[in-house]
Length: 111
Length: 112
Image 1: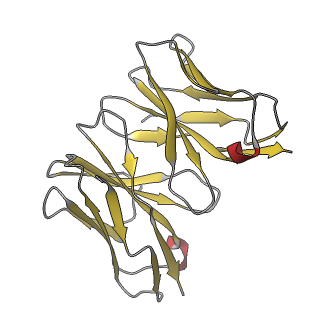
Image 2: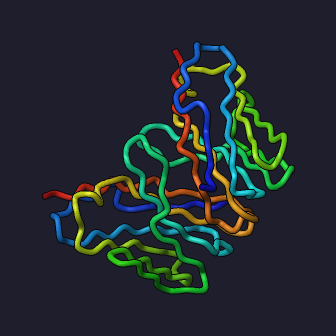
C-alpha cells in the first residue's frame, strides 16, 4: 500500500514568515495529493489539492508543488497569520480510492 | 446544503458495551469511508464502501464492523469496545473514489 512520510512534525514560525511542509510518497500510481488543515476537535478541512498532471498550484497565500519523478510534494504558506496555526496533513491516493495520510505537522505561528 | 452528517457527535460507552455510530450524506456520493483518529495522529482508514462493495483494511480489528443499507447511510458498529478504541471517528464520502474526500464533523467516542 501507499506510504506517505511528512516532515517536519512541528513547525514554529514568526507571523509574516513562510512555512514549508514536505511529503514523500511511495506508490508511483498515486495521482491525487490533497492537503488538509485540522484545528483542535474539528474535522480535517481541504485547503488545496493537486493532481499528477500538474506541477504547481496556488491559491492566495497557499501553494503546492509536486515532483512526480522524485515522488515528493510540498505545501508553502506565505505571510503566515495566527489563524494558520493548526495541524496540517498531506495525503496521497491512487486507483484504489483510498487516501493515505502523512503523520501531520503542527504549525504554530508566533505573533 | 449538501453535507455529511454524523450522529451522535459525542458518545460515551462502557467497556465491552456495543455501540453504533451513524453517518448520512446528502451528496449522493457512491463511496463512503470510516476513519479512526486518535489524539495527535493522522486519520487511519478502517474500511470503505464503493457502492455496495465493502472493503476492509487488513489491520482493522474484527471488533469493528460496518453496514451500508443504502447510498445515504453508513454505520460503524463496535461490538465490544475497549479502552484503546476511544478516538474520533470520521466518516467521509467521495464521488467515484477520485480522491476528493468530504469529511463529516466526527463522533468523539469515550470508553469508560
